[in-house]
Length: 345
Image (cartoon, rainbow, N blue to C red; front, side, top):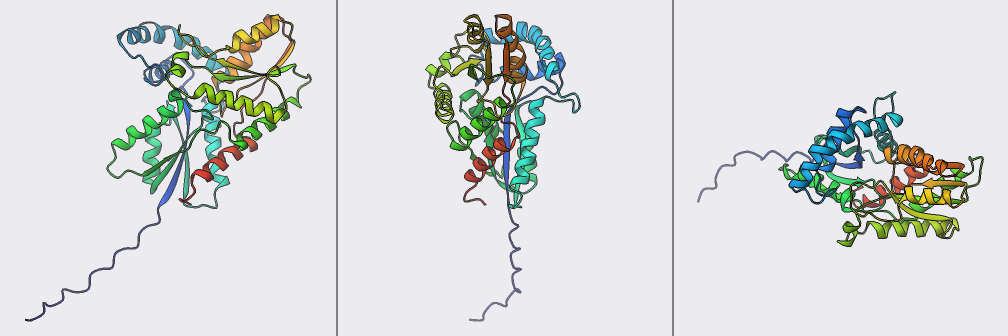
C-alpha cells in the first residue's frame, strides 16, 4: 500500500497572546448633572431596581412616576449643588472613585498585565461599558470589587446582578470573581481608627462621643435574611475594641430613611437631636459604611445633621471624612484586591 504524499508541514499554532486581568471598582452611583433633570434620570434608574425597592408593583410605579419623580429631583438637585465638584462638573463620589482606581493602578503597577477601571452601578460610567472596555483590552479574567464594606442585597448584590446581565449578552465571557465584604477586615478597622484619630487631632475641641452612622434599610429586608445590620454591628464592635471605646462613647445609628416603612434603628437624625436635647455639646460623626464621601456624608451628615444638632442645643459638630483615596483607605483596597487576585497574578 502506497503511503499518501505529505501535504506539507502544518503551520505551527501561533503562540497564545498573554492575557490580562481586569479589576473593576464599583460604587453606588451619581447623577451626571446636578440639575433636576439629571437627578430625575438617576433616581428613576435607582428606584426602579427591585433590589432597592422590592415591591415594583403598579402602586409603586404610580407613586414613583406620579409623585417622587415630579417632586424629589428638584429638592435633591439643590442638595447635590451644595457639594458638587464644580471644577470637574461632577459629584464628589465620581471624583473620588476615579482617583481610587487611578491610585490602585499605580500601587499594583508592577503587575503590568493587570488593568484597573471603575464604574457606577447607577449612572455613568456604567458597569456594562467598563466590562466591554476591559475585555476589549484583552482581559479574560475580571475581579469585580463592590466598594461596600458591609454586604447588602441593595448594594453588593445589585452590582452582581448588573455584571451578570452584561455577561449574559457575551459569547466569550471573561472568568469572573467578586470580592467579599470586608466589614471586619483588620486592615479596614485599622484604617478607620487611624483616620478617626487623625481627624480628631485636628479639631479645636474634644468630642464627648462619636456617632457611627451607616446607611439605613427597611427593617423587613433584614427580617427576610439580609446580613447588613449584623455586619454593621460587627464593624462597630471591632472599631470600639480597636479604639478602646465602650458603647456609650461610640454609638451605632442608621441614616437616610426613605418612604413610610420602618427602617433600621436607631435613626441618626433622631439620635443626634436627642443627644443635643440631653445636653451633649460636642460630637463627631463617622460613616464607616461609605468608602467615599458622597451626598449622604457631605450634605446629609456634614450639613443637615450638623444643623439638627446645633438647632437643638449642640455646639460643636464634626463630620469625619470617609477613607476615600487617603493612604489608609487605599491600603485597604490594595490589600483586598491583591488577596482576591491570588492565583491570577
